Each structure stands twice: as C-alpha cells, then as structure tokens.
Length: 356
Ligand code: COI
Image 1 (cartoon, rainbow, N blue to C red):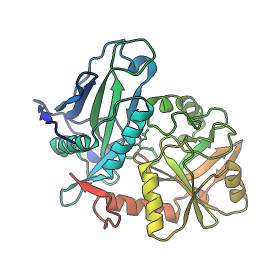
Image 2 (cartoon, helix red, strand yellow):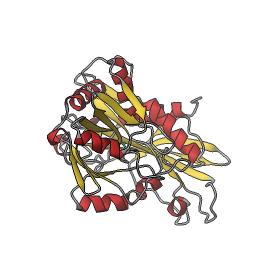
Image 3 (cartoon, helix red, strand yellow):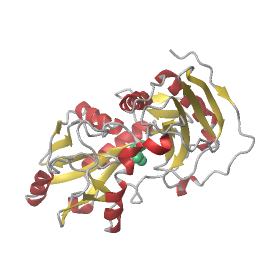
Image 4 (cartoon, protein in one colour):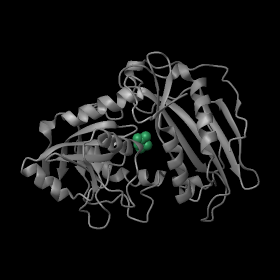
C-alpha cells in the first residue's frame, strides 16, 4: 500500500533543452530525478523528487564490487492534445521486482513507484520531445550502497529514476539493422541471471558487441549458452521471425528476458488472429529458411528499439540477407500500430496506455 508522501524540491535553474529532431539515445537528462533509500531499520523510505544531480557513494559501496543492481526502461509520450501517456508501466515495475528478487534486493512498492514516476514526469513535462520517433525514456534503477567488501546482499540501497529525451536507439532509425550471430561468447544460461534486468548481463555482452561492431554489425544475436544452436535474444531486444507465413519467437526458456514489447507484440498478433508460435528455433532452421526462400522477415522488439527490422544476419562466415535488406510488411504494420497506440494516435484495444 502506498502511504508514503513524495516530497518535491524544484531545481533553481533549468538546463537548455535539446532540439527535438536531433536527439540521439540516452545522452541528455532532464532537470529532476526521483530517489528513495532503503535501510534494514527503515525499509524503503524518504521518496523524493529532487534536482538532477550526481550522487555521492562510499568507494566500498557494494555496487562497485559485486554488481548488485537492477534497472528498467520505459517511455512516456506527449499526444497531440497534450496528454502524457505511458506504455504498460505496471509491467516494468513488476519486472523490476522480479529482477530485485533474483538479485536479493528488497521489493519496491510498485504503486508508489508508479505514483512517483507520474509526478516526476509531470514535473519535467516540458522535456517530452514531440518529433517523429522521439520519446521521453525513463530509466528506473536500484543500486546497492552498503560499504562492505564481504560477498552478501547489501543492507542498504537507492532506488532512482531518471528521464532522458531520446531519438531512436539504433543509428539506422527505423531502417533495418544488421546483426552478427555470436558464436564464441554466451550471454546467459538457464538458472543464471538472463531473465533479470541486471547490469552484469550487459557488461558481459560488450566484448562480443565490440568485435561485431568492428565488422559493421549493430548488435549481436545470442544463441543458447549450452549448445550454441538455439536463438535467444539480441540483448537490447527480443527477436521474431516470419518463416513461410509462421511467426515465431524463441520461447522463454529461463535465460531470455521477458520483454514488455515482446509480450505486447504476441498479444497484438493474437488480437489480429495472426498465429504466433513461441518455440525453440535454431539458427540452422533460419539458415535453411533463407536458403529455400521462406525466411520472409525478421525483427527485434524492445522499449528502446521499438520494432527494429533486421535486414541481415551474419553467421559462420555467411551473410543471410532478409527481404532484400528492406523493412518487411509485418514489421512496418507492427511498428505503425504499436507507436500509434503509444502516442495516442490509434485506438488502444488492449487497454495498454496509462495517462499521467
Ligand atoms: C530497453 O529497451 O529499454 C532496454 O533496457 C534496452 C537497453 C539496454 C537499452
């Protein structure tokens, strides 16, 4: 139950806002942030909106040593009639708590978090960009702060939310991205932390991304950590394939992150009576489909990535060009529908958007 009062301290100065049509991803931050502390004596306490500012931490704080942290990503949009919409924010706070549980971080009050987020966005509403393809990206996160070098769950934490006006995540914008299939490193295994949104998963992905980036690929596609055969996810997005009319996405197998956009796309396809299968799919199956001309489309889904068409996979020295490297019909329709609902331009038949 949300009974705590959120205090607001307004910033005395206002930063210059970037041009809405020149935004990149995650580089500028608004005037305010939300913060709340946890101690064993007081539990989660002192929820407050304060001017955006650096935080001071003891160098022994456990976050620096053992990486006990979790985060989320969601977006706010300004409609033409000046309403602010959030897309399924309750799902992000539910997932934050699932990640918290996996990382031994105390549960946050989801209702309080959503109330605080609405107040924070209202405080910084002038920062919501309006140009095509832009939005206000929201980054809630929890870090462990106890100064202690023993390997154990921390006794103190900070829950923080910051806001960033963003353009598209990939430099390609809504044009197809090229993805390298990773054959050496693995991201996660069943029983590990792959289903949690924790910094370590992203840190361990950097090496492979650096190598594939040098080869001209935007991201890597992770295969299963045991046989390196079955497709998992791209780290910043889940993946879907259209093969011979069947829409397939890897089933949640204990090492794939359950994306809010992934869930929404499955629900939307079902609502349209388009069959979608969640199952194991190997890279070999994709290669065969490419070979016999039945690989019609591939796309990624994520909050930052939205719907990102995939124009090419590079796997075992072979380039698999998809739909001649162009955006497919289904990817385009899903992108238009999802962003239309998120921006309040289209009807919201599945009741997803929440007004601030
Ligand atoms: C998001 O889509 O919001 C994510 O958290 C992916 C991210 C690592 C940019």
